Amino acid sequence: MTQTQTATEPGEGRAHRAPRKRRRVLRIALLVVSLLILGAAGAGWWAYAHLNGNIDSVDLDQAIGDNRPAKVVANAQNILVIGSDSRAGANGDLDHGDVSGARSDTAMLVHIPEGRAKATAVSIPRDTLITRPECKDRDGKSMASANRQMFNSVYSLAGPACVVKTVEQMSGIRVDHFVEVDFAGFKGLVDALGGVTVTLDKPMSGAKGGLKLDAGTHRLDGADSLKFVRTRYGYGDGSDLGRIGLQQKFMMAMLSEIKKQDALGSPARLYKLADAGTKSLTTDSELGSLKGLSDFAQSMKGVDPETMETIMLPVAYDKVDPNRVIVAEPQAGQLWEALRNDRKVPEAAKDSPAKG
Image (cartoon, rainbow, N blue to C red; front, side, top):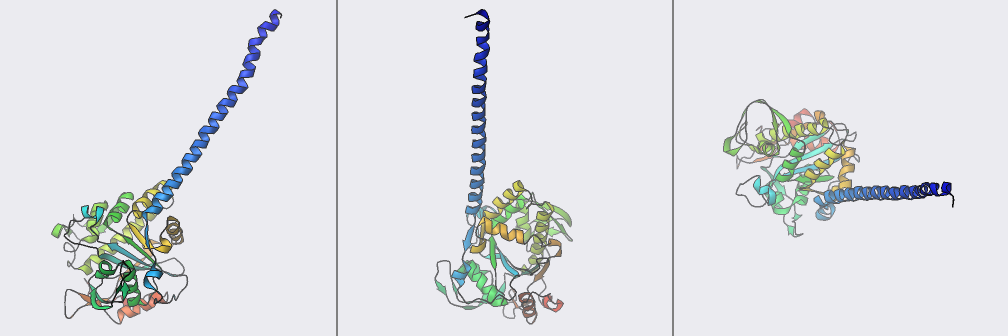
């Protein structure tokens, strides 16, 4: 072997080793990328399964049966939104009232017209005396119809499906969807938004453990927002009817906050909002999945909170018990007829004898 040949051997060894080294680096890189892809897919599946698992649902058709109003306008939507005052679980830390069970602390029938441009929210006072229809309770047992029942007692006695049936009987309107959120879910949703801004034209006194605020604009966190919508004695005339105005004001402010933040356009913000909002959520079975909720939310993107109309169901003070109210006619009938047929609500239908 010559000196020249010996001198070239080390170079030839390096030439053979370099491709092997590059292949090894490439394999490691591919492995890392594969792990990242699998990790991302796994995280995405975990996130989906986590959010999906947060949602409880109720099959309204099965629970109510066939005795339901016919759908009049095919593409209009009617959603019954309920805020539950349950003290169970995490809710007990947010309200220490000595109250068992749960009632519908807030109830709104939200009508979305066929064009999805403008919505109308009708608040049903919790102290309204109604005729509860024959229903099945949470265990599937039949409950007889009963007269002069407080509206908010229907939820505690028979559950959400009976509330839907009661509203359908009152209004003659087919309820397409049902959404219920409790104290903890409401607080979490507001905190996920970073708070909600509200403006008061007069001070809130904080009576009976309520929230104390001066007149003006305030940024409220979840805990204070819950106190705000539940304030009764420290604002206005101290009645349940007066509280409805605060609840409607807050709902508009929260919807505006969601739109302002473009919360549906940011994946990170959307996940945070969805995680908070679905933790204490019960819906009808059609909305009872992340996909169902997402598809419905996308279909509602054209609704502008600034154009939403808020109305209190017209009521009058009960002659037997002045602490209760009854549905006022003909105003209520005119209101329900307009919404049922997807028409503008006449001004006369908004005139409630009991003002609050």
